[in-house]
Image 1 (cartoon, rainbow, N blue to C red):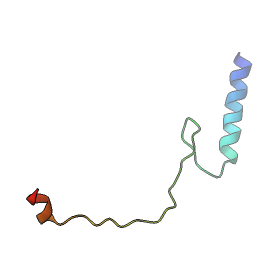
Image 2 (image 1 turned 45 degrees about the vertical axis):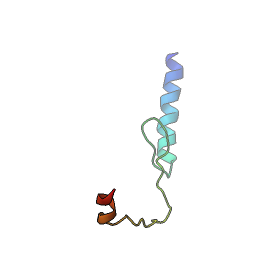
Image 3 (image 1 turned 90 degrees about the vertical axis):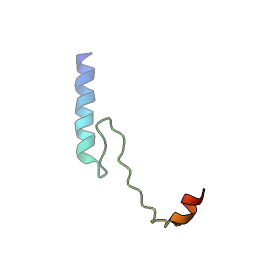
Length: 51
């Protein structure tokens, strides 16, 4: 069992060294959105107070 843990740690160290994308501590990839900004038009303040 100790040998299995050793190899898991070794694989994690080697994988982290070769990855171009950053990952979280649990191995999940860090995703950065590449979508463009979508403008949002908020209602005027007068219409909010009238409700």
